[in-house]
Every structure is written in C-alpha cells, then in structure tokens.
Length: 193
Figure 1 (cartoon, one colour):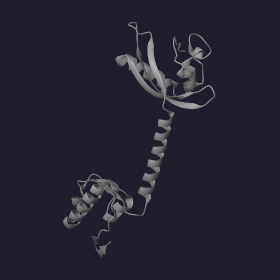
Figure 2 (cartoon, rainbow, N blue to C red; figure 1 turned 180 degrees about the vertical axis):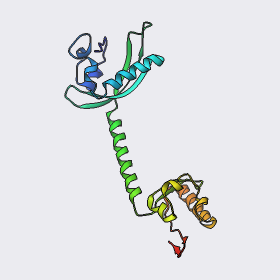
Figure 3 (tube, rainbow, N blue to C red; figure 1 turned 120 degrees about the vertical axis):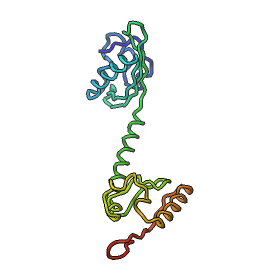
Figure 4 (cartoon, rainbow, N blue to C red; figure 1 turned 45 degrees about the vertical axis):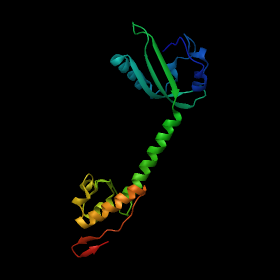
C-alpha cells in the first residue's frame, strides 16, 4: 500500500476519489486503483527506474471510483537523501492511448487488405529502393515479397523501365501524390502487362 502525504485536487477528475481518500491511512491506497493486470509492471518499473537513476516514467491503467478504466502517464523521483519519499506527477493519457490503439488496428487492417489484394502494390522510395511489395506483385515479378524488399528496382527491371519508374516516382514525390503505372514484363511465352 502506498500512502500519500499530498495529493492535488486534480485527483478528483482523474480518479473520482477525493484527495483525502488517498492521504495517510485512509480508505484507498493508490496501488488499489491500479489495474490488476498492470500492478506488477508498475511496481517493477518504479523499482527499476529508482535503482538505475532515482527516477521513473510509466504508462499504465487505473480503475476510477465509478469503474471506468483510464490510461495514465506517471513520472516520479526520490526527494529525500534516504530515498524513502517520492514525488511524482500523474496525468490522463486515455485519449492518446485509445487513438494509438485505433491507429494500430487501422494500420493492421490496411496491411492485411494490401497484402491480400490481387492488385500489384509496391512502395518504392525516391532512390528506387523497394520498401514494401505485396504477394501479388512479387508473384507477378517471379518471387516472394522477401525476395524484393530492400532491393533497388534496377535489380528487378530493365534499365529502360527503371528510368521510366524513377521519373514517375520523382514526379509523384514532388507533387505529393501516389502514382500508378502499367508495366510490361517479358515472360517465356511473350509479354505480360
């Protein structure tokens, strides 16, 4: 149980509890409102930080008085030479964490759609380095995506195609747009588009 000597009035908005609820030996210890799945991580993170440099920074969940889960960011440090007292700051980062979670899910959905698409999709940087290529494009060229990632397009296509590609890439970068193009590839029974 972590007993507190001072708690700012912001704790009401953050936790739903009154300042007095946390001070001294009252009804609620701050550790009691840390999400059960995060308690060990918080304890270990604080101990590790304090041992290393007397400071810590953590992100974890709390459960408010009305049962809502909030994400908080906390930083703290020792304030006495005996290293028995801590001073810290805790703030609500729930909106940021939910936005990051939503973005991660969106990125995963996008990646899944692109990777499973039958359209040929690749991302190439300004120097012609392949940053991403989906399975359909890799198969069309004659390999797996891992065969082409980090390769320059000059290792994949003919010099005339590379020159044309690079011109299109430079124009797209300058204009701040994506580019789509049709590519001819020689295969054993003729040309493919």
